[in-house]
Length: 307
Image (tube, rainbow, N blue to C red; front, side, top):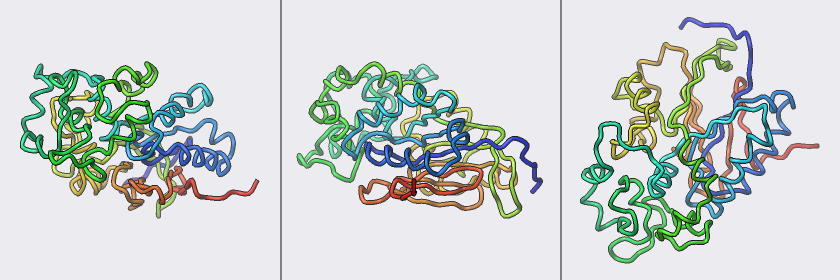
């Protein structure tokens, strides 16, 4: 593999799935400040890898925290990727862009309609013009059993805005600053000059950040085009929702000096230039982690740093 030496080394911080856990991101942020040289922290590129909502109790406070960062740290660059949970939140709120092919959001229901009764899709105000991922945020399945580990575990998000789970009142309760945040989330972020430590030394690479990863079965070029365009005609984006087909580095990038960083998978996995940073997953007792480049150092909310 041809290597390119790093000329300018900028600190890049990639932070895993927060899932409504405000105490974890508060502690992790303090630990990042403690662990890094002040000038490196203050000028860092900070990439949040998505899934800010659901499961944990404080989605509203998490989004308050995230939207406050540009004002508090004006010399940093902040990137907020959409996770599959955030995509569904935006879909429920009516904040997704219209499909590029002129189709209707109801056309995205067809692929999964057989699951509607079992999953208890939302049928309240606005459901007729809602992306299928937004419709799956309701509370009960056909037997009246509240979801715990399936679909999106969205009840805590509704409750953080003081509305019942599955209520259309959420659309009024979410403040405009949060709606703007959900509307503007990136589906993919690309950086051309990122330095990373490897077995061969410090290398300059391209970085692609996407919530779940890139589908190994499809052209990287085509996937990036789709993600940049935010094409909502697709019922379920593998790059935000996938598992095994997006876990590994796409073969066509093996010799391209490209870092692919994701969250989503409930694992901490560092394999060459393929980085998966989601140590906490859905579990409250596991730490929230970040990776710092170029060193690839892992910082957690549970770390203890001396003053």
